[in-house]
Amino acid sequence: MSFKVAIIGRPNVGKSTLFNRLVGKKLALVDDTPGVTRDRRVHAAKLYDLHFDVIDTAGFEDAAAATLPGRMRQQTEIAIREADLIFFTVDAKSGLMPDDRTFAEVVRKSGKPVVLVANKAEARGAQGGLLEAWELGLGEPIPVSAEHGQGMPDLRDAVVEALGEERTFGEDDEDDSDEIAASEVLIGEDIADPDAEAAYDDTKPLRIAVVGRPNAGKSTLINALIGEERLLTGPEAGITRDSISVDWDWRGRRIKLFDTAGMRRKSKVQEKLEKLSVQDGLRAIRFAEIVIIVLDATIPFEKQDLQIADLIIREGRAPVIAFNKWDLIDNPQELLAELREKTERLLPQVRGIQAVTVSAETGRGLDKLMDSVIKTHKVWNSRVSTGKLNRWLEGILAHHPPPAVAGRRLKIKYVTQAKTRPPGFVVSCSRPDAMPQSYVRYLTNSLREAFDMPGVPIRMALRTSDNPFAGRAKKR
Image (cartoon, rainbow, N blue to C red; front, side):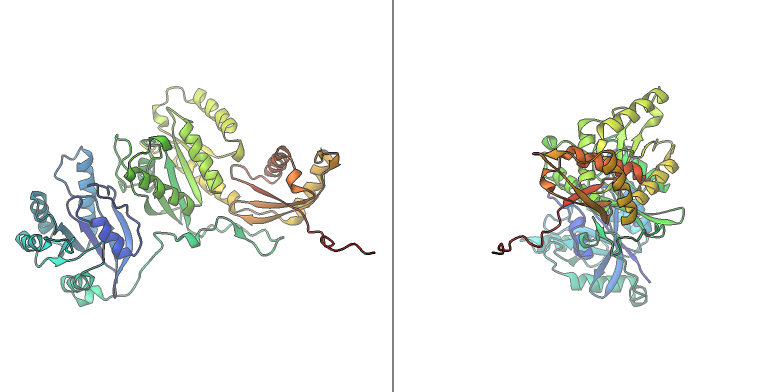
C-alpha cells in the first residue's frame, strides 16, 4: 500500500531541495531565486524504510486566480487534494512570515494529516524560527536540513506518527520509472543477429519529449493530449522551467510525456536559472525516443527552431514536427503547401519527416499527431537484413559507382546494419577517408528511399577491412 506526500509552503523555503533529498536524485531545479518551481512534479521517494510518492509544488502565494502566481497556487491546491499527507515547510532561518500563517489555515481546513517541517535548521539563529513555528498550531515542528540531510530520522518518525503504522508499512510498490537513468537510454542498440528483422513491439512504453521555443504551446499541447490541466499554461512566455514527466495511456499503450522549458538562442540565455532549465530540457531529449518539435504556425521556422531540430537529429532522436496554433491561420491550404516545401528544404538530413498541423487550444489534429509519432518510432526501430542491403548495393554500384580519387577508383565491398535507434549502417570500402561526402549522402538518401525510412536520422559509417599482411616484413 503506497501513500502520497505533498511538500508545500511559501516560496524559497527549500521544498525542491527536500524533494530531491527524498527521491535521491537532483530532479527538481534548485536556485536561490524564489519561485523556481511552477509545475507540480510527482516521483517515487524513500525515507529509510518508508516508500511513497512525493509531490513537489510551487510556492504558495496569495494572488488572483488569473495571474501566474494564482494559477501556480491552483496547481498546489490540486496537490493538497491528491495527497494523503502534507509536509508544510517553513524556513527556520528567516522565521515565520505572514504567508506562512495564511496558508497554515488553508492546510488545516483541508483536513489532511500534516507534518510541520522546519527547514534550514542548521543555520545560525534557526532556533528562534523553530520556536516561532509552534505558533502555526500544526503540531511539533521537525527541524531538518534538506540540503545537508540532517533531521531525516525525526522526519521519518513524524510520518509514521501522522499516518499510523498500518498506513505507512503497506506493500512496497516503489516505482522508479518516472526518471530514466542515463545508462538505460539506448542511443544505438546493438543487434546480435545481422540478418534478423525483429517485429515492432507496440507493448513497450514510449518516451516522448515535447520541445520548442518559448510560448509555442508545448504545455498546452500535453494538457490537450492527456485531457486534463496537468501542466501550468498561460499567455506568458517561459512559464515551464523544470522538465516535467507525465504518464499517459494512449490506445492501450503506456506513454511518458516530457514537457520542457522553451529554448531561446544561446546568446539570449544569460540568467543561471534559464541555463539550468535549458540543460534540463536537453537531458529530457536524450532520455526520449521521439521528440515532438512544436512550432508556432504563425511564425514557423525561426533560426532557433532549426537549431533545435538539428540538435535532436545529432542526438539520434526521432523527430516529429507539430505546427501548433493552426486555429489562428486564415489561409490554411496556401500556408500548408508553403510549410511542406520549407520542411523538405530546411531539414534535408531527415527527408520525409512527419509534420502535422495541430491546435492544442481546440484539440484539432492530436490523433493524427500521435499516429505520426508511432509511424516514426517504427522507422526509428526498423532494421534491414544484410542480404537485402547488399542486393540493393549491387544495383546502386551498377547505376552510380563511387568516383575515382587521385586516379584510383574507390571500391565498396558490402554494407550491413549494425544498429537501430537510429538506424546505423557500416559500409566496408577501400580508403574511407577519401570517400566524398556527396557520395555518402547519395548512399544515405538512396537507402532511405529503397527501404522506406523517412524522417529519422540515418548513420553511415565507413570502414576498411584490415590487411592481414600489413606490417609484415617482405620475404627475401
